[in-house]
Amino acid sequence: MTEVYVIGIGMTEFGKHPDRTAADLGAEAVRGAIHDAGIDPRAIETAYAGHVFQPMVTGQQVLAQVGLAGIPLANVENACSSGSTAIRGSFIDLLAGVADVSLAFGTEHLTGAFKGAFTPGEDDPEAAVGATMPAVYAMRARRYMEEFGLTREQLARISVKNKRNAALNPLAHFKKDVTIDDVLMAKPIAEPFGLLDCSPVSDGAAAVVLATGDWVRRHGEQSRAIRLRASALRTGKVETAPSSMTFEELTRDTANDAYEAAGVGPEDIDFAEVHDCFTIAEVLRIEGLGLWEQGTYPAAVERGEADLGGRLPVNPSGGLLGKGHPLAATGVAQVVELVKQLRGDAGSRQIDGARVGIAHCRGGKAAGVEGAACTVQILTT
Image (cartoon, rainbow, N blue to C red; front, side, top):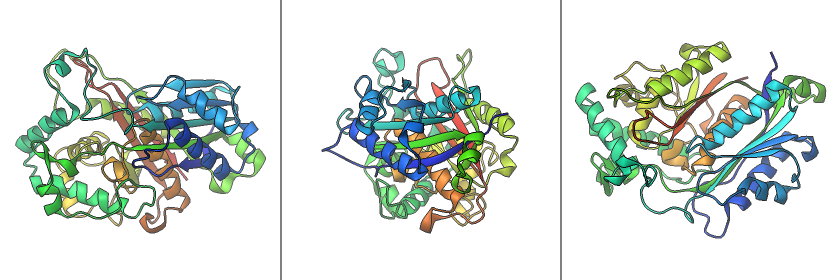
């Protein structure tokens, strides 16, 4: 079995970049990843570019800026999972022997391309009657409250935790702590959510360089190389009956694929980066990954078990709620954080003894389908 390693990472600051383009941001992240890998750019043989609301062939624009035009490149659109799906493309190239070194990146300039709440596609029947992503997740939160006794304060603690982590991350969109009262008193969005329960509209890019184990050993780069043991992708099944609003089968099934491929289980995970587009989303994803039993995660957050010094830290980067959510860049940024933690390079948010990390990214909504795309990546030292 071919081994795959992340040998270089790069990321822009997430936030609002009115004077930049998605291609500019992508080029900055790619240059950073190549520099971090310490390689000649000409070693890169294939590339995958994730983006959602950007112009056609944005990936080619990025490669032209960094001197990599001419290599095989695929642009990937898979909703919020676009960047993590790009990583999977590079992962498969390396496993298949198509390349020894591959580049994956995601880039998004949302503040110039999107305004207002995200919705399903314009022709989606749920969107036609007013469904937006905040409304969909708000309904899920209300149902979880009904089934498991989740309190509004417990939900707010997730935002407090993630923004506290983001304040330690120089590349995060938000860089200051908030209190439970701040979350509870924030501008109403969709009951029970206020503004601080929702991820922001962000611009940004992230990139990773991956290589086969043979290439890494030949070039003596093993000390900073972090193994990508699994990169799983699934799409939601057609719903033939009402599905649970409080448990994600898609997340569970994708995670099980990743656990099997990596040869680990939930009990082996030291920390997690998950797709917390809303506060309730972190709950649903963590429990779907099997890291806590259903109905138990909010109380665990309250006890501090998901804090940086807790039993299993969740979203040490700040997550989407704190770090920001430039759609296609999000899944790649999650892997960037896993690599930093596993290298021991995460600074003041470093998790002691981190050896196995998991990244979960899920995106998209279509009527009659549980979810559009879900990826789970597992990395180890």
